[in-house]
Length: 278
Image 1 (cartoon, helix red, strand yellow):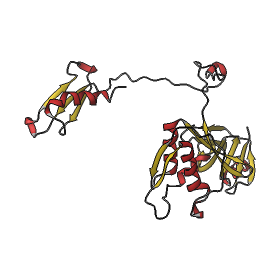
Image 2 (cartoon, helix red, strand yellow; image 1 turned 135 degrees about the horizontal axis):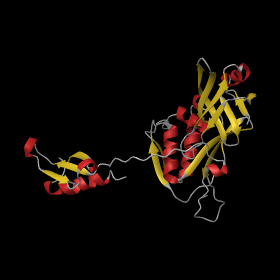
Image 3 (tube, helix red, strand yellow; image 1 turned 180 degrees about the horizontal axis):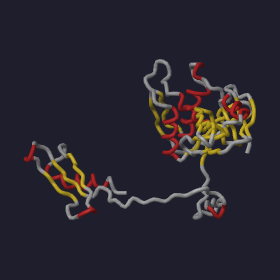
């Protein structure tokens, strides 16, 4: 695999082909990351990456470099470059309301449109040109669902992620023709239970996994509560929920129910316990 390397103006400055390890994680709604480890004696490849701001592996797999680490031991000498998916540049911006307006708000529009406006207003075409990171937004499909969205002075990437996760929307940025293009997408169902699309099977037998770990927590979740109502000291009314559970299976919790009526302590305790069920 070739790693294409670009400067801050997206000019190609070189390619890296020799590396010890490459890990690139893409995420549908959140922001993935990457790391590239190179032999410390390979000054040419190190020099290219050290001078780079952006990288591209292939279409849709682009990132920007955020750090470099040099490591030396008696037996090994390496440089590791780390960074985020290219869309991670959205973490460099906060959502600023328009001049003279208290909040940034859009009502009754699709979540896809709102994401596009967030990117447009705070990255590609902001009112304050000092905030601009040149780029364009690709054509996208809007869903029929509409929402009301408002916020102010929150981290842009966090807000886009919230909207994307709540509405099953993907987003990413790609380096194309010397510029950044932003994409707002929808996923394809590739599970075994459907027949419209070719399923995607992951496993060692398909040479698609490098490692796998499985763990289980054998300890119980919270299942017993001491509920104390309004009052002081020993005079506080109380209720026990789940008191029939014994020994190591019993995981106790204190519930402060000062705001509840005395006859509602048990139901309030049970509702609290239910919130811990996993």
